[in-house]
Amino acid sequence: MAPRWLRIHLPFFLSAILTATAHAAPIAPDFVESQIATPDVATGDLVVVGDTLFVGIGPFLDQAIVRIGPGGTTVIADGFQSLAGLAYDAVGDRLVAGDNVEQNVFSIASPFGSFASPVDRGTPLISAGGPIPGISDVVLDPADPTALLVSDADDDFVSPDGKLWRVAGGAATVLQSGFDFAAGLAADVGGLFLGESDAITFGGTVLGLAPDGTGTPSVLASGLPGQFDLEFDANGDLLSTSGSLVQRIDATTGAVETLATGFVFAAGLATSGESFYVIEGGSPTAAVFAFDPVPEPSVALLLGLGLVGMARVTARQ
Image (tube, rainbow, N blue to C red; front, side, top):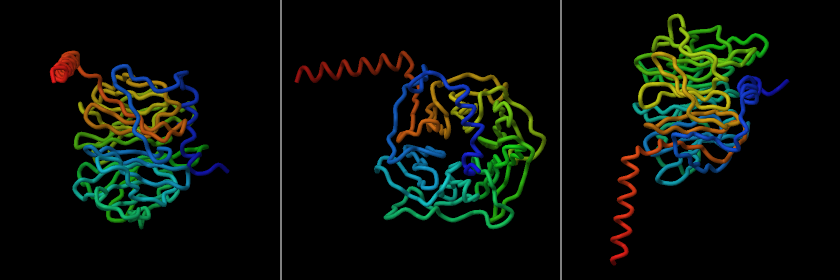
């Protein structure tokens, strides 16, 4: 039998293969692309907090989380097997990380602190009601940052039963069930969005729910070429890694716009202001792809004039 990680993510990989373009590298016409080097292949998920990036690294069954920021690169936790979902809790100053082989979510205290050596995964957060067999994504409960919402892709490819869980007080409770392969999550006080991929066509759908995860899901967008991760952008709309693409979804109308193409399999996603960051899941790379908006023409002109002025000053000296 295929490993649990492969069975969970098979629809995402197949969707990526079916929709992959011929580009050798991702292309995003309205953004400046760069790469942030990582100590090993980037994997699982990532989150940006201010000027610091937290990202999973390493091969299946031997993974870690690194912090990349002004102080350099530090491995803060290791011992993971299949990272899935990262989130930062500013109130509790902790990083939470899912592992879909361990079928649990872990908490790493004071992730901006000093780490003489990496912690061993951190503190497990589920002691009752679980395990969660196919963790896909983890977000903070917008009404209670001590609690988490977790999407569960399940691992039965024949008859998937994706779920949405709430993890609080050491216990995991099912809020919703009956999804296909439940995927990305994005949550704020205005609502909760959950992505899923169809078990037969692998087509992606994004559903809207009440902020607490209850109620009947409504379709916001469908027909996506797969769905893996979801994040809010600076305007309150959604970004989605969808097969070989990164797409923007209007959180009100569901209108879809493609921002980046050319990934083999666009996986973990993070946003910060107008910028976004992506893990290439289909062609393991020891880097995170970063996309910053192209400056407005007036800003570019001012920057250009500033550089010219500096050159003139230098020439006079």
